[in-house]
Length: 213
Image 1 (spheres, rainbow, N blue to C red):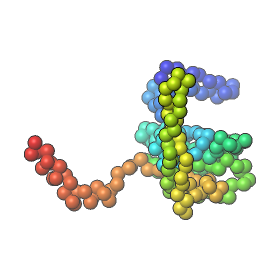
Image 2: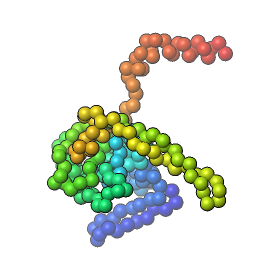
Image 3: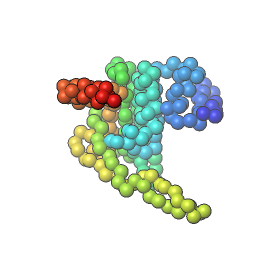
Image 4: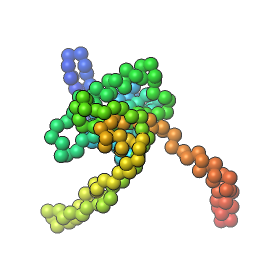
C-alpha cells in the first residue's frame, strides 16, 4: 500500500481511502489506524457476489477480514451488469439500513458474515427478502487469448456464466427479484469428512508411509 488519502465527505464526516485491496483497507483501518468499528460494512459492490463468486470477491473478503478481527460484518452487492443503463444504489442502501436496524436487537452471530445481494431495480419492485444458502455459479470458457499491439499474447479471464437455479439459493433469489441474505460461516471445515477420514485411518496411513522413508 503506497497511499492513504483523507477524504472529507461533509463538514462532520471524514473518511480515509487506501490504494490496496478491500481487505487491505480493513487491516489498515483496524491495525494501523487503531479504529475500533461497531461493524465492518463492505460495499456497495457494483456487480454480483453470488454462489462461487465468493471465492473471488474482494467485497466478501473484506467482510471476512472484519470477522477475523472479531467484528460483525456485512458485504453488500448490487447485482448489475454492464448492460444496465441505471444503477439503483438507493435500493441497496435501503436494504442495508433495514438490515442494520435488525442487527441492533439481533446481532450477527460470532464467526458469521451476511453476504447481501440486491437486484438492480427500484426498491418498490423488490418482491421480498430471502435468507438463502450459497448457490452454484460457474464460469465456462474462462480464458480468452488476445493479441497485443506488439504481437504478443494476453489473456482475458471471464467466461460465460452457468447458474444452478435451485430453490433457496442466492442465485435463484436474485434472478427472481428477491434480495438475498446469505449467512456465511468462517468455519470451513467439513466435519463429516474429518470424522470419516479419522475413522478410515488416514492419519495412521500417512504416518506409516513417511516413517518408511
